[in-house]
Image 1 (cartoon, rainbow, N blue to C red):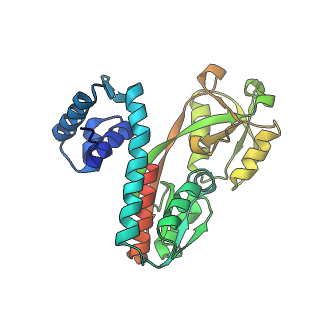
Image 2 (tube, rainbow, N blue to C red; image 1 turned 120 degrees about the vertical axis):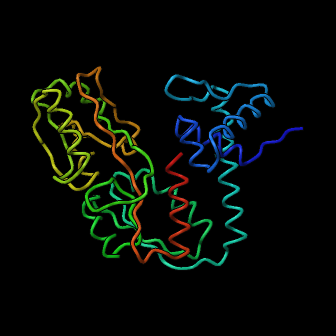
Image 3 (cartoon, rainbow, N blue to C red; image 1 turned 90 degrees about the vertical axis):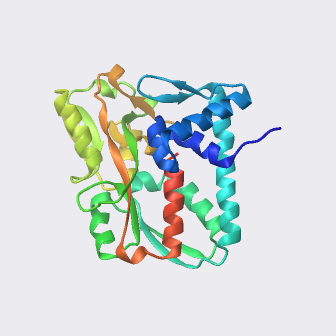
Amino acid sequence: MKSLDLDVLAMIVAVADTGNISRAAELVHRTQSAVSMQIKTLELALGKQLFVRKPRNVIPTQDGEVLLTYARRMLTLRDEAWAAVVRPDVTGRVVIGVPDDYASSLFPSILKKFSATYPKVEIQVVGLPSSALAPMVKDGTVDMVCATRVKGITGEFIRFEPMVWATVPSASEIWRERPLPIAVFLPGSVARENAIRALEQARIGYRTSYESPSLMGLLSMVEAGLAVAPLAHCAVPKHFTLLGQAHELPDIAPLEMVLARSAKSKRPPCDFLAEKIMAELRR
């Protein structure tokens, strides 16, 4: 008899996302031994190994990746079905602040799914740098903020977003220039600070060839072949080229993504959007 318990699938997804059984156990509110036992039981039932246990982490096998694809879809469908029946009459308006690099890449699919489940909830997105959003969530101008942790934003941890150096294939040799031309966000940006700190620690000379509060501005400069941009991995267009140590460029510290809520956001529409954001971005 074929049986895939959704609670066990949630454990599988949590382990894959965290790479660690103990952290996964915290996410699904179970003990570490219970998670390990459930995964082992499912592996025996399937006759397939789902994870490879490494000294420092746990990674999915090829069979595990296949199951993960279906598990994510099944869990999403479960949540949508539950919401459609239990919460059909949720109405209201939610104002959320999101910086450009997250808004353009991560939020279209989240907001589309949320709107499909809660069509009567109006969503307004305010696109500003994380540092500019910090006072807005504090004074209640926005209901919530999904941003990089900066001074003034003490929200719930979502995940660490990797940072990378980005260029375009037509400017593939630009990384050899010294001082290195970089396109960065304005002062106060954590992405900017992390990138410059990495260059200084590696003793690589650089020049700021372009500054902008807008992601589009940075991408335009890179597209023109005039600079390399340190970006959140999620914000890099697919046709860009990623650079790293093989190109004599240092690793950049990741960005800590958090969800912060204002005091006035304690109402159902905000609660449900926060749930959707956490569920989608922790994957």
